[in-house]
Image (cartoon, rainbow, N blue to C red):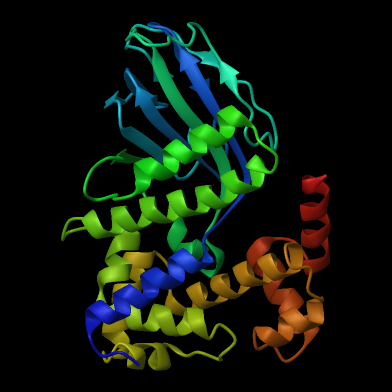
Length: 321
């Protein structure tokens, strides 16, 4: 086990990025004239991503807060909050058409391609996807709802070429482009999250604080790597070389729940993923997570999620149809 606090954090960030998955990726290239307004409805459980390739724009969140965007800026809205993209603060937004699993669908609004000369138009690359953090879902709830990104800056080296490739895939619509988009989207999301973690200031809270705090990182890494172990608070504190009381207090303050409650939520998140996405038998899931019986596992699963394992699987399958 590493003893350097930075090693703990690095390993935990690696665990976060390995477990992150995007599903139902829906990307569109939008070309607009000098004046435009796009409205994006709230989509809980999803993330919105916008990249402004050409022009200037305004991002308006649901609470009325506005942010100025210029070419090369990107926006990552991790909790799917409602928002608008506008040519200026006076523009009115029309609702963006929604289409489930419409990966790579191309839309053009107002204006046209202008070959060989500059014009006052806008080019945006817009996407929506289910954002899945795997066993680290509990920490995902603590991520900021909005991340503003300078895609061409030093913090995100290599991001612009990937976004450019995605734009080309959408425009060309070659065979298999939706699958390529999905894989590239995973890389983009991982780079965005990593850049945010790296740039967070010293007084950061929530996910960044947990990733950087040696009093938490060792325990988080251990329990995510061994979710089926019968953890106690004392054992988790030992992973951080700190006392039980200091560890428990710090964990509650940063994560927002007790250590053992978090252990249970991690297990149930993994259980949901294994049941619905990997379609493992309930008995096997219970064994993987250290439960002595399927009945004990089912009770814990229902207590946390509100549904039985079997019903959760059926609901997920119905939603996917």
